[in-house]
Every structure is written in C-alpha cells, then in structure tokens.
Length: 148
Image 1 (tube, rainbow, N blue to C red):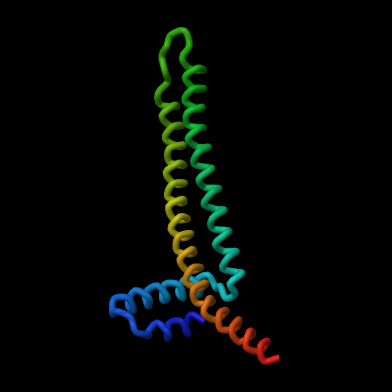
Image 2: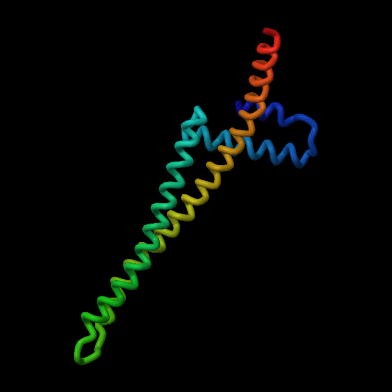
C-alpha cells in the first residue's frame, strides 16, 4: 500500500513537497519493516504499547523523584542525632545511585517519546494511504447499489 502511495506521490506537486512526501513514506516504510508490521491493527497495537511504556517510564521517574526526597528526609532524621553530624559519604552514595537511576529513566523516556512520535507519524501516513482506497471502495459500492 505504501508503495502505491509512493508512486502516487509523483503526482503534480512542488519539488519540495514531493521530496518531503518521499522522505515521510520512506521513513514509514523503514519503521514498518524494522518492527515487522504488516496489518494496520498490528501498527495500532505497537503504538499503543509504546505509549503505555512511555507512561510507565514517566511514572517511574516521578516515583524515583519522590524516593529521592523521602530517602534524604529519612536519612537526615535517622542520622542527625544529638551531635547533629551527618555521615555524608553514605548519604551521597545513596543519592548518587538514585540520581543515576533517574538519569537512565529520563534517557529511556526520551527514546520512548521519540519512538512514539515516529510510530504516530507512520500511523498517520498509513491512514492517509488507506483513506483514498476506502473512498474508492465506498464509491464502487454505491454505484453497484444504484445499478440494482
């Protein structure tokens, strides 16, 4: 279907428009091929799964930020005794570990957001490719009904 749309993209347009369309369809084709997606339903499932992973990662980030605060608060309450001296080395190690986890999660989230954006663009491209085909089928169906 994308090959058909690619061929139709050669229809009268500006040269810039043709190039942009070809780039978009090439990107969509590569995405579908990389993910081994053939039916539209499977594409919708992949996009849905990517969005779900993105939401889960975002939730983990929020939880990690809360954990950082709670850990700092708990540690200070436990370790600031009568002498008001803080054991910085252990506390810094724990904060560093949680900060690194947060950094990794942010990287994952950025990657997931980019994948979701790419998948949404592919989905839109495929839906645009299907729309003319569905319109043709509806028109043919109406003609047959009228002939009866």
